[in-house]
Image (cartoon, rainbow, N blue to C red; front, side, top):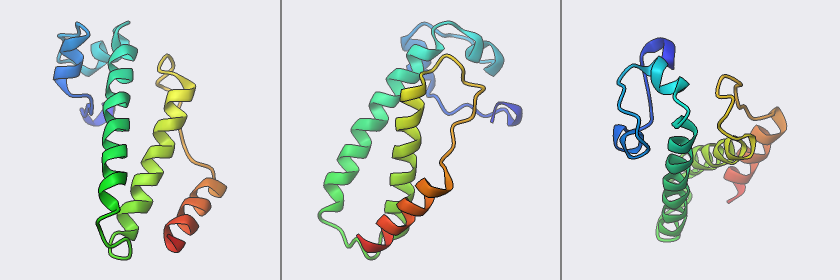
Length: 109
């Protein structure tokens, strides 16, 4: 989303690792950017776990779409963490099988 001028890493996380620039191109090329990504991934993991715990108190039938979406983003994050944060230009995607599996899992849960 750099082309559209969008950055989804909070400035507080960037500042914490010492990135002060507001220009996306300089943020992405900063050698400390992978550290910021790792910090954001930790926060995402915490929030995915919290959401999973809260789902126990909700109607899964009413939240099927949200659950499928959450599981999709969890899998994408897992793949990003496995790949590492060095080559961010390499796109991370889900296979057709993974998408199908997530859909079926979401339907039957």
